[in-house]
Image: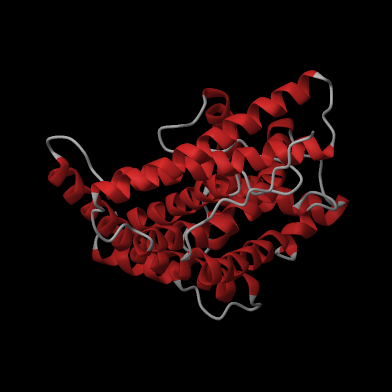
Length: 329
C-alpha cells in the first residue's frame, strides 16, 4: 500500500477512534527518536555554535611566531613540573581509592585531575607547535600556519551555515504561521539550476547538523556537572570512549533525520521520512505535545544562543589550569 494511502487510513482511524496503536517497529523508532531528541537538543544546540566559533577562536589563539630555544626550555620545565604534580595527585587518588573512599570529594578530585591532564596535553601540543624540531622544522611551521588559516576559513563558512540553521528554525518552525520557507526555497531554486544541486545542499545541511552534534558531545565531554560523557580527542580517544560516543551519535542521528524532515517539510514533502517521523510521532498520546509545541526546537535555539554568548565572552581566552583538586592528608 502506498504511503499516502496508509496516511489517509491513519487519519480516518484517528478521527473515529483517537490515536491508534502503532506497530512495534514504528513504536521503537518513535521512542528512540524521543530519547535521541533530548540528546540532540543538548549536543546539537551547543555544537551548532561551538563548531564554527571553536575553529575561529582556535585561529585567534594560534601561536604567532616560533619561540627561542631558551623560551622553549623554560616552558618545557614548567610543563614538566605540572606533570609531576599531576602524577603525584593521581597516585594519591589511587591510594585513596584502595581504601574504599569514593565519596563526593573523591569524585570531584578525579574529575579535576582529568581536566588538568587534558589541559596539560593541550599545552604540550601548543609548545610543540611554537618550537618545531627536526630537519623539516620550517616545513612543519609552514603547515601549522596553513592549518590555522584553514580553520579560520572553515570557521567563517561554518558560522554562516550555523546562523542560517538557527534563523531557519526560528522563522519557519517557531513562528506560527511561518514567516518564510527560507532554506526550503533555496533548495528548490538550486534544483531549478541543476537537478542534484538542491539535493546536495539539503544533504550538506543535514550532515552539518550531525557534525554539530559530534562537536557538542566533544565539548561537553568533561564539562557536565552531574555526569561525565566519555571525552573524545583527535588521536587520543580510548576504544571504550570511542564506542560509547559512536552509540551516542547513532542515537542522535535518528533525531537529526526527524529534525531535518520537520525543518525541510516544504522541500521534502510526501517522503517516507516525513510520514514516519511526522505522523507517527503526532499519533502518540502525551508525547506528541513535545513536538506539537516545538519543545526540542526551542531548547536547541536557547542552548545555541547561550553557547554563542559564552564563546563570545570567554572563547577567545586561553584556558589556564584551575588546580581545584585537593588531596586528602
